[in-house]
Amino acid sequence: MHFSSPLVPGTLIKRYKRFLADIKLESGECVTAHCANPGGMIGLNMPGLPVWLSKSDDPKRKLAYSLELVDLPSGPVGINTAHPNRIVAEALKAKAIAPLAHYETIRPEVKYGEKSRVDFLLTGDGLADCYLEVKNVHLVREAGLAEFPDAVTARGARHLADLAKMVREGHRAVMLYLVQRTDCTTFDLAHDIDPSYAAAFDAARAAGVEALCYTTAITREAITLAEPLPFARRES
Image 1 (spheres, rainbow, N blue to C red):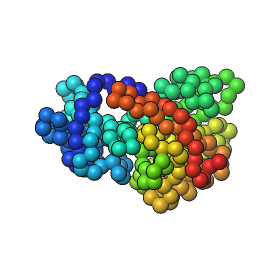
Image 2: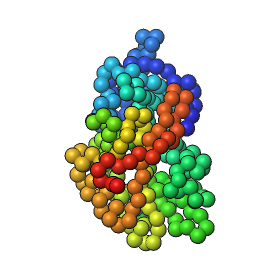
Image 3: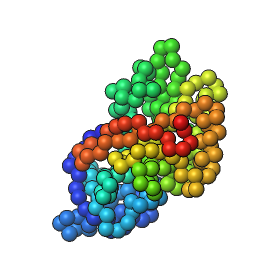
Image 4: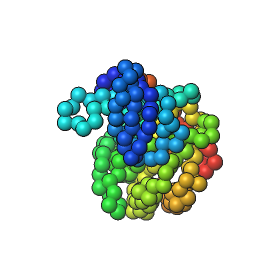
């Protein structure tokens, strides 16, 4: 997934009201940027962090700038939660996700379950329909360990229950965690942040829902799927 325009450097002043961030540009100008991230952004929202913004030329947009990357000493972090589905869609088309490479048709945003839309419905001749959900990951509290979620997510737990229902109906279901960081070697659930989500994950896995995790390659030009990431403790 390539950014639509060159990214603009700045320094984070503050992130507030979930979807807003004040940024000081290199010119000294202070701007308010859209922060497409409803999570806690733990460790990624401290004043003074170097950040990178995209800028839209659309005159209808209220905020021209969007917060895209946070620069940490360990590497860049993608915080825009609108991007993972685009990254995964490109990877699916390129057959870059080995466990899902045999599917021929990729349909995004298909209604299913209880008031939900599955991120992707994959179909192919002779294959069980595959319901694929994608979750963005950028929380790190222990060096090298990516965790999800970074805030309580009742919606995420509902998605797991919906996937489990699809398995019971004879379909295939996969939860894919996409880590928008380059400094992680393993993945786990943040049980202490949302015990209900962890319980829903266990129930979904017991029902036959598959779980995958991939890291990403991040530059100031693009974010692309990289390597599979092993589960630290809960998966073998």
